Length: 471
Image (cartoon, rainbow, N blue to C red; front, side, top):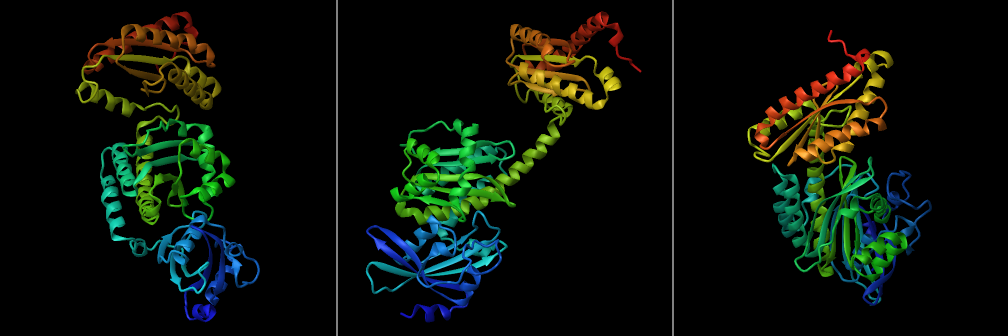
């Protein structure tokens, strides 16, 4: 066949690719012939496109001369040219702000050791939903049926776990995991993970430490210019070892022999990753389709959830001190007194009023006063780890302690006084109250408040010059 004449008759960017057969795998992959549209794309001066070539096209050159090395691309070439599977993908390369619509068709070959296929691509800056839906009916239906659970859910964490269980079953993988990444605070969080019934469940808490954040941060380099990473045999795992030996060692320790990894992106922001391990490699195409479509929906839902969560935090938190605000305190007290939550559990209430804030504001300025409030909140957070701390007013804080005992409550109130010396100018007047029934929280609040003011009178008796003006 005259490959050059063949591609010249195609308008879209098209080339013919040859793949050397090497047993059950492949050898070198070359670009045999290209049409003018393809030449223009690889020799285009627009550096935002995934082009590495700076010279002219040379027939039978290895493909890496013209665009980045990509294990997914190589696997597609092998499946199309050697295994004779037609391929269509609609993908978003991780490093570039555009979408690829890709078509590959097997061609006849007179050489049993070399296979040929076409490679046609269209590039667009905007997502085309119609092209995205051209995945198989079975995959699209399965993914949509499970991801639609997230719409309108009132329990995001529980529902995302159900979705991950479903996706693992669709992929027929041993393990699937959804990892959220906070690049600003250099933290990761496992949103959900699912294991097959026969797999040993491994604790995932370690993904939240600094060491594993560094590992996750390196995945973008491993994925390279593609939209995913797929390793399904020893050769692929060896490539991971060459690029990232630390991650390879972690995978080996976890008994991973195959993995597919997809980034989750929404509005140009990388939100995290989803992966499946130890899947049936013969169903690799189905797994890639599944996770490709899954990431599209999950990224959108996670982004919306994060936005809602940020708005919720803004409405419930005191932005200066980082503890809950008065509005959230009132809501919590209402729920307790109405028996909605914590109905009959014992409750402890602590009021801690910051001494001397007005004097600091008057003599040193509001910036010094703000710093004093931040230090006061930090002290309380160190004393009442895991408890609910609220800024009840300008210089007044309230702490709720569920399942409290009178002894623990007294001990924690004493710890406030003992730790004051570690924070510059921080001094509290403290009152507390234990209530055996949480529904009586308002009575506990009143008693704790009275005791706090009694403690403040003792403070001003010792330091009358610091008594605040009531004007």
